[in-house]
Length: 259
Ligand code: T3D
Image (tube, rainbow, N blue to C red):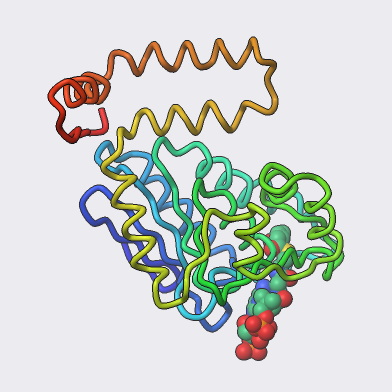
């Protein structure tokens, strides 16, 4: 599917979403948010997909909420979050496949949240992350108050969120905000190599790993052990587990099918 403000492509078992409002640094208006929700429907429905990439067209990744079309000042921003942003973030986080954000340029406000909702955040060296919310009198939203302390700890999270300072990609990598920064010219090939590798991995095991790790901080050790046991029980019956063990015994590379 391709629309004016979003490009969606499926190549084999990999889906790619490109935010496509380059003249607005891919800022999110209601149309784009709705389109994002629609392509996520497709991703969720597919049995064949094994990885999702999310990137931006032009020189930006995403500048957050579209301030030109206007945040509903005096109206209920909470409602906009509840109806549009929050479901999106929850759905991305819950996808049973690896999600890679390819941050080609600036990621600001909810655009930074979107980049951090992915399991892997890769960025071009020239990209920057801007927790711009405080600059316009808002708190970080679309999951940013969750993702920041989760990734970089409370001290840095408070600093970035309250000062609204820009973090360049290499610094973002150094502090653990993102997985890796690459020279601009290498970002796409590095992202493709990672996505290809993830798409050939045992998808169900990766989905279970996400699900176990993301909840871990909010569970006791005993609860976490139970979660691991339940998930492992299911994976123990999977075709990929069978193949992984057979490949080990045969001393060959495993050919995982994602089931
Ligand atoms: O109701 C709800 O939606 C609630 C949800 C809120 C969540 C949020 O995301 S709140 C935070 C919203 N985002 C921001 O506050 C970021 C605003 N943008 C900036 O601070 C800067 O543009 C950037 C740091 C992102 C990039 O700076 P720079 O110097 O590289 O680019 P620029 O020149 O500022 O921007 C280029 C163009 O994009 C420019 O348009 P022009 O002058 O060339 O016609 C600029 O106006 C436009 N643009 C940038 N950000 C937005 C935008 N247009 C609409 N909305 C934007 N957010």
